[in-house]
Length: 241
Image 1 (tube, rainbow, N blue to C red):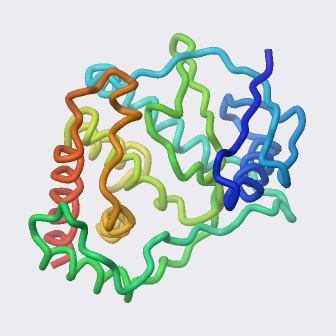
Image 2: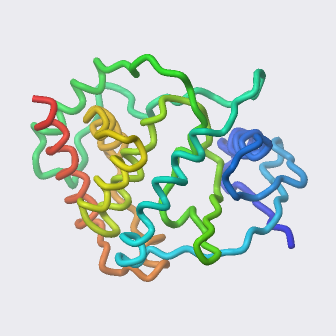
């Protein structure tokens, strides 16, 4: 069985298909699709179907957190051959930043923008990053996970996507689950600036909760997502003080 991907955004189609194709060509310990054919210029690819299903139920997210952390480590352990053609991670934040309309603490966001504008990625040995690792992109066949949707794949600092996964797990389950993921995946708590960067990349757009609702989590509202993002940002800035 094969799966056809068609990227609906013309401006991103070629880039997204190229990223996913290059990432899935790497020899990785992670179960994932295999590209059969790709047409980056046309924004299409054909890949093998991988068995499994995802869940964003809070209890499932908590139970699978340790395995998700190990999966993150496995992605980062993927060998990167010379000439792999993957882009290097760059933040989507562009100074000076715009305070989201949903923000309740504008001063907090202005401080975050100041910190993000001055920040530089620490020296590191680049690793493979999925860049959108969260429970809806992980298919479970029993206890065997597979990772799909590699259109944001890149290389970069090993901590670069942990804050994004932390945010998702915190929203879907709780703060303890999000923090547990980071410490299990990284072996230590990461620099709070990664959480600041994650937060400022949200602004100024409102949260689209349609995917979570489609997954059965109608309890997750745009207001709830905004509140969780702002609390994580406040905690990160407090840790930096």
